[in-house]
Image (spheres, rainbow over the protein chains, first blue to last red):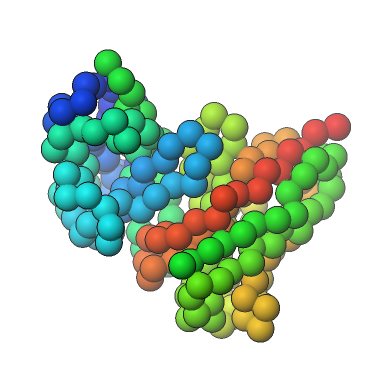
Length: 107
Length: 118
């Protein structure tokens, strides 16, 4: 199963609503997670099971989708949200594919 | 507080070997599956290997199968990755990660850099 993300990068301003899309090459139910990674840091889990917010993650982050099409939405972009975002296929049989990433930077 | 501390990275020649370690604390290590994920400089994330609770089952990405070996020592709360027959393409920061259940990695170490070069 391959994951693609769009766009590969975007420029946005503080306060903007941002949507990132992840598409799977075949249906994966809701077995999808989203991570945020800042330069020089380890990734941080934001959402799992496509739409469940990880504990401690701000509510401006949300996820949706099932099957092949998924979205990560940041309702009001904050300065600390400028980062690269990755989707990941979850599974009970480990082939934990990551998407190529979407870089969000300041407009 | 969960802590994962990787060590063992460094510069190695092509064809060489390294052993990475990940010391875990702040949680009951033996109750969780664990993985290694790597990131080449300026590139995205690549899952490398996973080990089940108890260590009975191990899994590998196609790119490393037959060359890397994952293991765990629950008495030492430590995860390992033996890297053999290293190639330039294996150069990356290697992270260990705690698996929440389905490969969703709730906690990550700070990473250890492996550089394969002559």
